[in-house]
Image 1: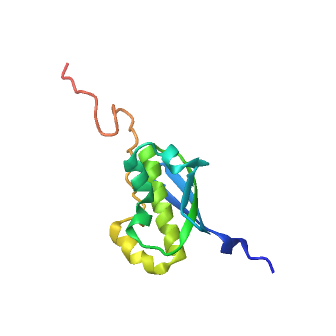
Image 2: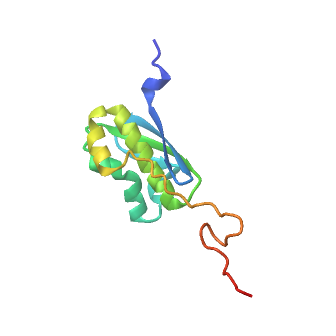
Image 3: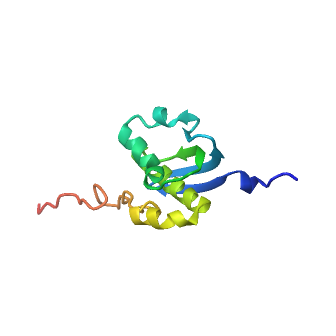
Length: 135
């Protein structure tokens, strides 16, 4: 009997600003992270961005290794790193519910809703008005 597709991997979505990350966690012999078919070291150029993206793995100790495949689109590179962290955290909870407390305490399960405010008519920026002149 063939195994169901749901049993082979865990798929979750993470968001930040306008960045959306779809993560697939597959049990593996060693941890491998691929983002948009590139290695994590190639996709995120700085160590800070790599740390942000993979922080969920660092905060919890897991006996299981995973092959992580990520599809990320939209937003800037920092928003993408945070959306990857959000998606990985959600996937780890689906794998093991006991990790929820540690990840929630770190704030990795919260979808950070802060985004740029839209520009209003008659304004220069979202809240900055044109200079008023008496004459």
